[in-house]
Image (cartoon, rainbow, N blue to C red; front, side, top):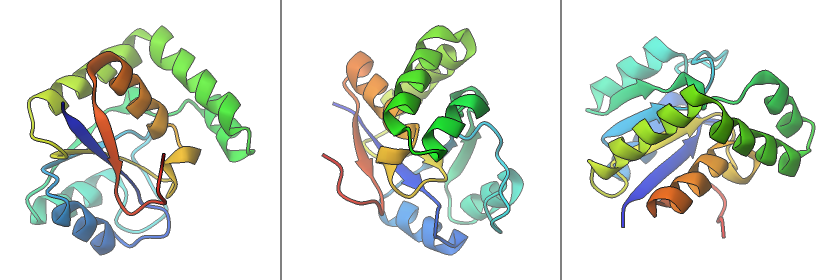
Length: 154
């Protein structure tokens, strides 16, 4: 069985994120934000990729796995279950998102356990679309998930 790590950068500095990733043995960070930009220093695409490169971690941005704005608004308003179901429908119904999900599954399959991590903003994966990504990968490919630096997830 293959496994995947996940991480959110909410409340973290870039060096804290890098430490969590290197301590976990992550070799590739896959950014699953629709826009790989952040007002938080160190978390926009180019600066994040540069920081990761300095510690030997690769970077990939899978834009279509990001949360569309209308669905993201559901998560932000506290309608997490509705957001999760809308995002699941998006993953299954959007050809580009479905293709990128399969591409992610291939990356995980060709790597070692926890060598690949997905990144988004939210600290708690239960309030983030990356939990749906994990559930879809588990159902289709038997991938298990480990959430770095997050509250315990059942």
